[in-house]
Length: 298
Ligand SMILES: NC(=O)CCC(=O)C(=O)O
Image 1 (cartoon, rainbow, N blue to C red):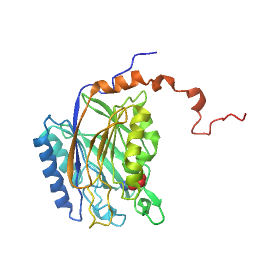
Image 2: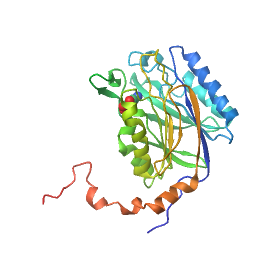
Image 3: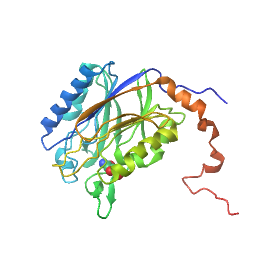
Image 4: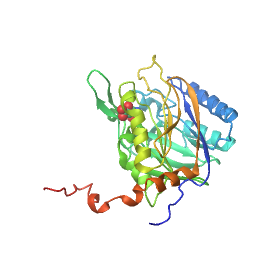
């Protein structure tokens, strides 16, 4: 058995900013800035990382994505977030925004992460678009106006270690988290800006966040908008941080709230020593999972 690597190198203090967003982009940006500063001022530990929700600068609406779309990195929101990260010396996961790619005129649901110098260190385009139709529940079809990204995303939070990033519906596909958590990437967390809804949220939100943590023995961070019953989309809320045991260590309610958590560098190693699934995997059985594995016929 080889030594267990320590994916998280030191304690990380994180805040999740759960707010709703309306039609006024400038108002949305300022609302988030006020609360980022509030989190920095109120946190009892110096904050290292702040996470925003999916579609934090615009309504979450298929018919509005193009109206709010911006280019990255020169668009207004990217510049705005970069300046905040730099001024306050934090890593900032900028939720997600509708991104216009001028090279193909397509719109993506994109998350950008900044380092404490304001530099972009990670960019993820939502890979799995939220197209669902639950009779009597919710129908939503992002693919009417959005295009899916074509990559898993892993990047380094310098000094702490690596993280993987997915956006909302991406959490239903365990492969992105596996890619991030396993060697050679060895991430300590998956971060998901997300906006589950009031039909699937109560059923699946906590379970999926906990499942990704347990599958991979990493932290999972999921940040939702606050629920606004006057908007066209009722977000579930309940932003969460889950530890590598699958235990919820911080959780918001449904309204506007900031939640704080401290990620312990020793816990991942401890969990992996106690439940050593990393060394017990049977790749000889499931290495063909993409093409269709051979199953026993007896
Ligand atoms: N914004 C989203 O991707 C929503 C995903 C969701 O609600 C789900 O059930 O999955």
